[in-house]
Image (cartoon, rainbow over all chains, first blue to last red; front, top):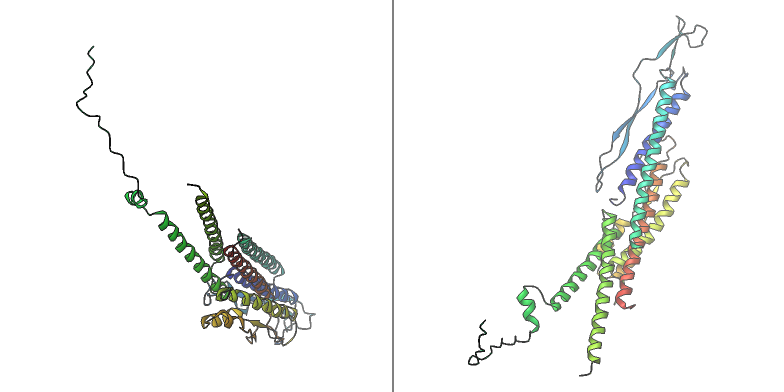
Length: 135
Length: 104
Length: 120
């Protein structure tokens, strides 16, 4: 609807940031998983954000998640001969998740979510004040 | 010093009294509209504002309105114009009654 | 003679539609974690647009019905639930503001009628 587009745009931002937080939480939880769903070590996942083209009647569309893809960087190899998943040379292939990077992304995502909530509240306040003209 | 004598032969020239103004003269001379025309123009404006408020309300109900502030201001303008028109009508009726009360 | 013209009856029905949509959206939110649940919505604006477009008198708009439609679009979630909490919250806010807009505009139009009828 064309009247309250600002709310839809903020909502798309909130959804995207929430999804990013879910993916980051999954990465952190699986930071040491050597046996993923397909038997291979867990691969770090990333969310690709894309600007949403406006649908009929809208001016701006907001953001949408284009996809969740695997991080192509190669996994870490750690020397640990006692590990059950060590190969014949004693190296274990660990997921390419860096907890520090994930925490920074988490903070960014959380601040982004708060910013979108603030934007939506500001838009709601403006609309509510408009109706005061009519008392 | 010489005081000129009053020339009694020439009559005192009296400037002709101006004709009493007819209602349309002065305003027509000024190039503007008469009060009656102004009133009817204001009524047309009032009607236009009411129709505009009606269109904006319909757009709001059918979800085709794009700007809340324009809907709100147009409806408020219509309300104010209606109040103004009613007050002008009241004053005009009062003035008419006042005139009818005058004893000739 | 109708006191309320088509636009005012439209606003009146719009308010009812907004109330119905509020219930539907609240139901969506409460089922945000139910597996297999599909969200629904009420598009009362389109129903009113159709009714007003073909209306000859305010009475015909008064009987406009609203239908609750299920949204069967796909989702990224594994449990089949397609409720996006943030989207529902935004729609709820939008619906509330919509209701407030229609209420204030309708009350001002009624005030115009009162002024014309003649409170001196």
